[in-house]
Amino acid sequence: GAVVSQHPSWVICKSGTSVKIECRSLDFQATTMFWYRQFPKQSLMLMATSNEGSKATYEQGVEKDKFLINHASLTLSTLTVTSAHPEDSSFYICSARDRGRNYYNEQFFGPGTRLTVL
Amino acid sequence: GDSVTQMEGPVTLSEEAFLTINCTYTATGYPSLFWYVQYPGEGLQLLLKATKADDKGSNKGFEATYRKETTSFHLEKGSVQVSDSAVYFCALSEGVGDDKIIFGKGTRLHILP
Image 1 (tube, each protein chain N blue to C red):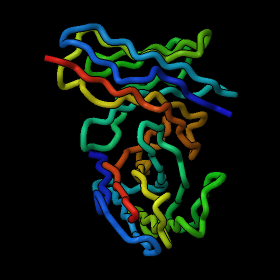
Image 2 (tube, rainbow over the protein chains, first blue to last red):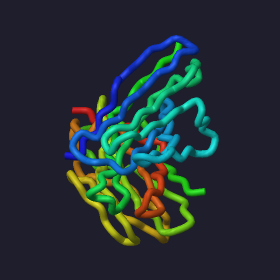
Image 3 (tube, each protein chain N blue to C red):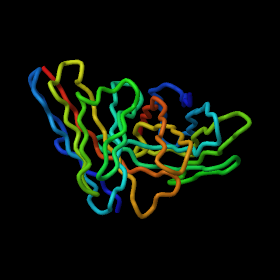
Image 4 (cartoon, rainbow over the protein chains, first blue to last red):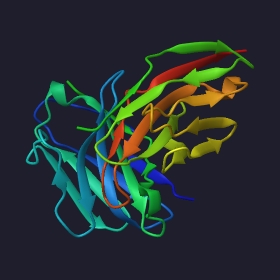
């Protein structure tokens, strides 16, 4: 149980285009989903927290107009990188908190999406 | 602000060797502490956790003890296997609500047969 999937697993796009990444909780309802960015040999850095049906909360320094997050249902959150540029190339990881077991702040992670912007 | 520092890798060991991956933290309150593991091609998985001082988290032969006096949460395993090869992340969270998790940079572990 507690499986989180991401789609696509990797994507290559041209500079200036927009890319959408999906994060789904497959076997549980997620009241909260998190989006992280991971640079090579670096830690995961939280970009934003999204709660179902409300606006995402972005971390300081993250451009909300560039990284659009939608959490339309209890099992799906999307991250759209708008007008992508090479510096947006990174590994994007989502996680979800199980509505049924909110204690200890446990999050379940997706396998990540590798974005390469040419 | 809160932060997590863990030993840099990669760490390379032979099978059946003893493993220690050091982790220290800074926090303003009394955080919960975690170790996550990321196997090749997979997402992060919670390996073990501890929520208060002197708690010991354990799973799959791995252990870590929450040491408030030294602000540490070192990961240990008595006899590693090739299948333990992965990246290990130490992390903390201040609250049990929607507070974020703060991760260390990760330590890559290679186990040689």
